[in-house]
Image (cartoon, rainbow, N blue to C red; front, side):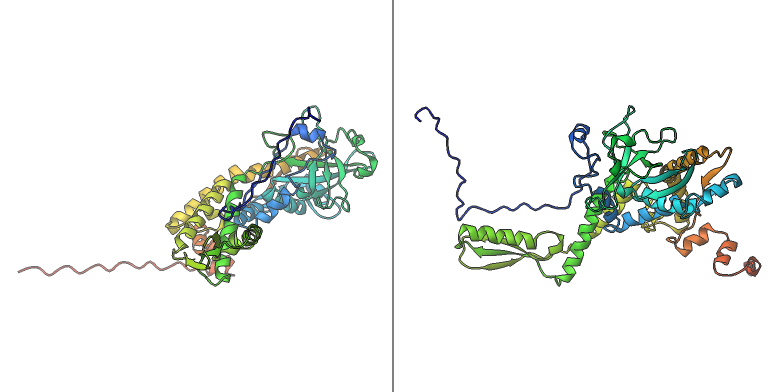
Length: 439
């Protein structure tokens, strides 16, 4: 064995008493899903994961409860997308009222508006007659339950989609494959999967999403820049609550004797970081290990952090509103230093801009889909639109309503009739008497 090369043994350096223990704390972060097309093609699964753990839609749902301004804008989106319901010509009324055997097209719009507000996507199952000559039912499918098939067609679009009621438990909720909606090619791509995995015969899935620029599979929400500040709002809320729950106790630095052995030190620091770091443990203590033989306490909580919290809250409102491309006033967030008359004018203008730049682009895909369904079923020369929601909403203050609405409308809201209104009497200003002549 003389020719065998000597291998240098790599030993882990021993930890001395004076070696500092540095713990890494993972703060809140947002990981937007990305997809490598080459990796997708080589994987064994037939569907594309939405996020590292295939749970990004659930993250978007949970984000609504983490930040009040974000939730307000999502609620505003939901209401404005649904509007006052569908407006249509008489020749398609019967078809829309029987869009499926569970409800009307207005009911379908309500469900679609919820998905469009959060995911900016929507999905509908299309069911054909036995001879594939007409569409008999259109059902809403939650967007969170849809994943694209990994195989692409000649134009770079997924040939179909997989649907599961619970993607965290595909054993009990086995995904089913649906062809992409195409009335002229029914049953073309369903042969690509096992028959036991295919959806019921004569069904296709329409799935709208605005694809990310770098890959063809997953949607890209326009408000993604707000997600970091949503997490910030959540941490600020937990921090404030923890400060109160912990009795506004003063944070501090604790020194612990270093006479303990290295293993005990590591165990102490590990357990301390598990229980004392993060927003949930606000107003607690910071532990350090040194060579002193006694335990000391140094209080550090002398700073008033209220201005910092207020500044962070202002940043959250500004950044979330910018990401949603809307005036905070639209979501019921009161602007500082604005006059009442100016608020009313700004509200009307901002709502009009928001409709044209955000809401209308989200409504159009659903209207195009319904147009395709009605046209395939033989409807011609019809009118179809979504009635715009009124200028006034529940989040608006009464003072602003008085500025925007006519007196007759205000009176009707309080149960009065127009004839009950009485014009205010015009009182002439008193003319001062002429001054006495100077003699």
